[in-house]
Each structure stands twice: as C-alpha cells, then as structure tokens.
Image (cartoon, rainbow, N blue to C red; front, side):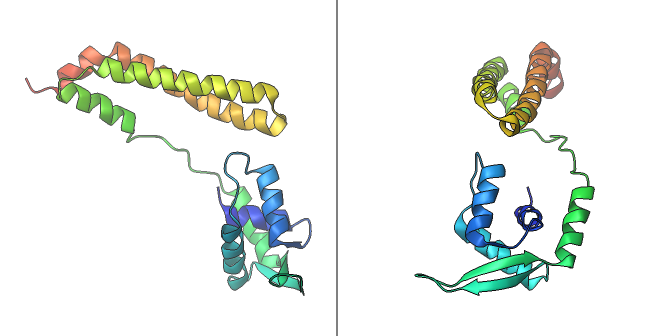
Amino acid sequence: MSIGHTLLGLLESGPRHGYDLKRAFDEKFGHDKPLHYGQVYSTMSRLLKNGLVEVDGVEAGGGPERKRYAITEAGITDVQRWLATPEKPEPYLQSTLYTKVVLALLTDRDAGDILDTQRAEHLRLMRILTDRKRKGDLADQLICDHALFHLEADLRWLELTSARLGKLAKEVLPS
C-alpha cells in the first residue's frame, strides 16, 4: 500500500492535522497495521517537499505546533494517476515454500511433512479470518475475502504438489 497516496486521498475531503490523518488511516485501513505517528509526519514532510500538499495553517498548543495540511492540485493529479494504475499481480514465481519442498527432497527429508505442516497453518489462519469476517463490518469482510481467496489458491497448490511429489523427486534428485 502506498501510504503517501492514501494520506493524499484522505486529504481530498479537506485539510487535516497529522493526528487526524493517522486516526482516519487507522480507522479505514490500519486494522491490522496502524501507522506510527513518525511515519505520518515523515510522509507529510516528503509530500510537502514534493509539492503534493501545502501547510494550510499552524496552531500553537501545549506541545509542538500543529500543522494542518491540504492537498494541492498536483497532489490530486498524483492520487488520480495512482488510482488509475493497476497493481502488478504477484505471481509468486519464487516461492519460499517451493524452495523448502525441493530442499527437503534434496536433503532426504520428508517433503510431505513440510506440505502437511503448511496446510495446517493455512487452515488455522483461514479459521481465524473466517471468524473475523463473520464478526466484521463490510470492510473487514472484503479484506478477509481477499486473504481467504489467496489462501485457498495456496491450498490447491499444496494439494497438487503433494500429488506430484514422486515426480518432482525424480526430477530434482541426482540419478
């Protein structure tokens, strides 16, 4: 996720302080990984330097001055460009799990055990996500669906690889 673009998008509804941006980000996108304040302020500093935001006002308080940021026209254009650009699909062509399976075969370990252990871990996480989805709001449901579909694809791969272990062993083991 591009934190900078997300913060810019949040600013399109109107100027906000860094604290308000962090709170809005965490509420909408940070369920599992809230932003650190330092991350917000370093990102806003970079966006300011790049002309994508401007300081809309400064308020004195009991602590440091509070800057209120507003998005610029360049920032709006940047968000629009980012939203219109498709995300690169992740093909997972260099899977760590595949590497473990091949190394297990090469070192005379039980690759089936590795696949079984991974299957159990995937199923454990799927139960957690299914429970979260059942209890969550629409945003949680959509996020959990995305993760569950990826885990289901991984499970299909685990089953296929288990069925082909003998053939894979013949290909990777020295004759």
